[in-house]
Amino acid sequence: MELRHLRSFVTVAEERNFSRAAARLNMSQPPLSRQIQELEVLLGVTLFYRSTRSVELTDAGRALLPKARTILFESHLALDEAKRWAAGHNEKIVLGFMSSIMLSKFHVFLDPLHQTKPAASFKFVQMRSDEQFSALLDERIDAGFVDFGLKMLGERLHANKVIAQHFLREELCAVVPLDHPLAHRKEIDLDELRDEPFAILERHLFPAHHDTVIAECRKAGFAPRILHYGDQIPTVLTYVTAHMGVCIAPRLAETSWGSMLSFVSIRGRPFIDIHLITRETDTRDAVSVLRASVRRYGELE
Image (tube, rainbow, N blue to C red; front, side, top):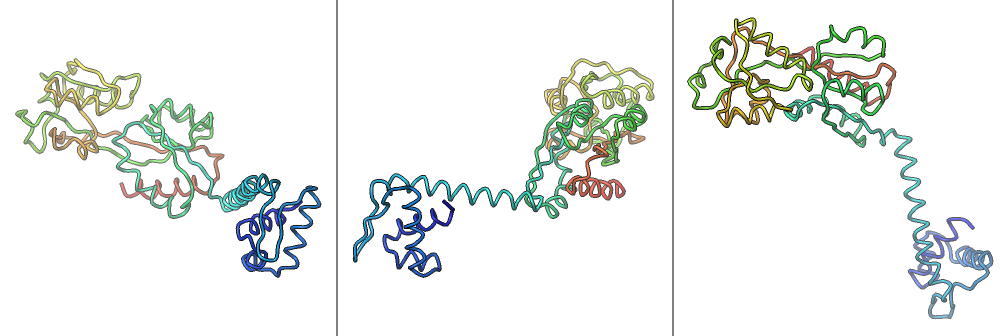
């Protein structure tokens, strides 16, 4: 039995007329009749009651019809799936990122990726930088956006064949409530926050950000009085909105929080760097386009 037998059977069953079914299948009536007869012989049953005026399904025909439709539908799905894979349209790229505030920058590489691979699928997974590194090596993610310094990972990157590319240099700002005395200043010395309670990211979750904040405060001549810890930048900013302290956060967060908090530049413009990490052995087109897009954007930063 071939698919053409089932296709002819379903068409005749739907049209209830051999002439109309033949026209719909773009064939003449005699070959169509032969295919139905061949199917009846193969199955050992009569599928249609035939008369000069109509064609009606037998009980065996009615039992076969839904199964035949399912087989034809599944065969179309299988062919479409094979064509999609052959065209590379079923590529799935899993991207790691640290914080939701980063997502506003992802269009700079997602646009070119989508133009090149319009049917590829993308999944975003929020992870700490160290988690992303491990997940990349285990192939649970295909790329990650991390904030750890490359000096501390240089040997590990080389040993594990991981490519690191600069993506974003993000300015760190002093963040205070809107009614804070420093809220309307364009720039401050970090020393002006020495008497303020601080909210900060937990070090075991975001060591690079945490250590940068501590180092900048020490450079300004004081150790921050930390009262509150958060597991994400939005958590830390929530403490500030409640007048429970001040914090140092990426300028990028101002897009979402600027109406509730004041982001004030710090003299000297401290910053953190965000890097893209990918496996050197991953040569898929979508990953290559991702690297190229990030490289171009990083060069403009």
